[in-house]
Amino acid sequence: MLRPFEIHEPATVAEASRLLARLGEQAAVYAGGTELLLLMKEGLAHFPHLVNIKTIGGLDAIAFEDGVLRLGAVATHREIETSPAARQHAPLVARVASQVGNLRVRAAGTIGGNLCFAEPHSDPAAVLVAWDATLVLARAGGERCVPAAGFFLGMLQTAREPDEILTAVEVRPLPPGTGAAYHRFALHERPTAAVAAVVTVRDGAVAAARVVVGSVGPVPVRVPEAEDALAGRRPEGEVLRAAAEVAGRRADVLEDMFTSTEYKRHLVSLLAARALHDAVSAARTAH
Image (cartoon, rainbow, N blue to C red; front, top):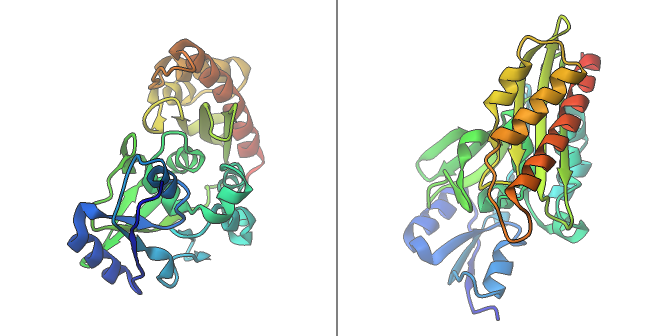
């Protein structure tokens, strides 16, 4: 049963920020509402006030300017999936948007809502951490930028302050010789395990790598031990398999009532092998 609530429709980020500051814990930011309203319908949360940021002009824009792809926080997954700018400058980000939930969720759900809800089984979160994306947070007094890797603090917890609003996600095109890939395993709409990899190959060897494991722990995290196993080595069969096995062993994994930690680690190793293979293949053809 959805209890009554009041919707506020600010015209600016500053106005929204002041509303959040004044209403405190009685308010939540409303963007797409696909996660928030479900919680409220189930009686797991209640906010007497929802601050609708979809009324703020420009927060749904997707544009490539000054070498940066900027995804407005209230851009829907479907809009990102079909955006020519996203497809050209961050094709993996666009492809992953097409894997979120189902068509209804992608049509209503927003990138900002997905990231700020910080549900552990988020496809975009893992990819944006691997891509080293930047999240722009704004309030009445100004704005600040937070790396995606530092935004997720725990299950349903982020670095966003109560009066801040996520206004955009900034994604820079990958440099030459760099490829990216994402693989997931899912029994339903949400992934059970996922791995994102970004690899730079220079002179036949791995010059840089970011391996991120998502959906098996509270937040998507890099696995530096797997990255170290690749550094300076030729990215071929045994090297990639060894790094993938390290990713499975060292990933931050939580057991749940459906899947054991051992099985999740096995899934991570398999997915990491596929993601690394595809990222290296893409790197060898990237110019």
